[in-house]
Length: 442
Image 1 (cartoon, rainbow, N blue to C red):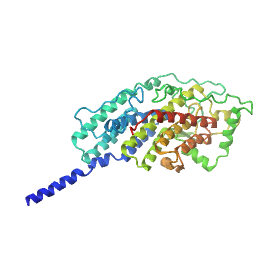
Image 2: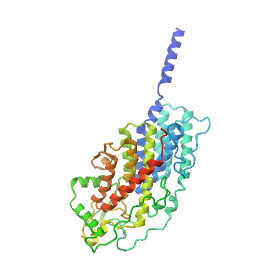
Image 3: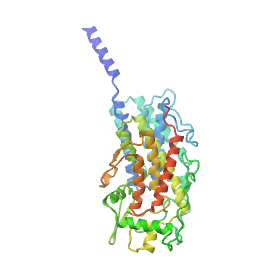
Image 4: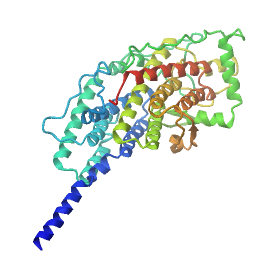
């Protein structure tokens, strides 16, 4: 019997060794990366990060995750070091160290996400859960330790690099000076908030040669007396559209509102409602697309990363233009010169009008996603259902980007010109990101 038992044991060992380890099934599932990005998105929402700073949260966390993947599979993925000209060479694992690169990628994302958001430690419990998943699924202790250590190494490297982007300096920069000057932006009701991130155009971009690259022509000059002037006609156009909104136009305005902090005033009481930022919305769209196409873990990480880079640079470029133009919002013009009781359909955000941030960043993200999935990728965006807003379906990412831009006109917070121009501006940024960054080697 002994030889027979030995044979059975040998066959069982062979069978077990050929099986995919349980920890790989659990941790190499791209759904887990999508869930991890959504976790950061939820933290960003809960803590009122404005759109521009939210884009910074996403980009550094995704780059950390991607650099781990590139280190683990250099045959198929290229490091961003050198492609992003100011990103130094990424550290490699210590010699004789074993690393599960997908697990380390998840941890690196969380470590960086934890450090660039607040309150401190927001992702600690989630990280503990990831580590427990690895242990429960049977990851060997040496592989576990090697993965944790490498994730820490990459996270520290990315965080050190991030500190050179001029973000810290903008925290103490001078505040925007409000001037009662015709055609110039001033705070709007109900918050009358100070200008948001007036120095974001000074942040170091990833791919743009300068923050001033792809700047469109100036908007129409202030001229409210001449009813045939472009300025007057664009203001009247917004008023007419908002005064006669269709159900579908209202749906689009609500769907793309993405207001991280809306102040609701009822009588003498006020309260805030929150949604994820425009960048967070496009992170969700990235998740929808990668899931629909069933991309593997590494591809999923790379697509999130390139999309987040496009969003980051698009916000910098747009914010530079906003605070160069200091252009007035439709609400200010319409209530002062046309109808004092008029209000936009959605709440006007606290920064200058030109150009439309949502149009710019949506088009930039759409170009990256189009390069991955094609220009006829039809999908249904259910991102807003958690806020009680019905899904919208699109024939392509570019169609979605145009919808996002026009939604700001329906909302009454932008002139149409800013959205048309913003769409072109964002497309140029997105195409630049696609041309310059070659994440996959083949």
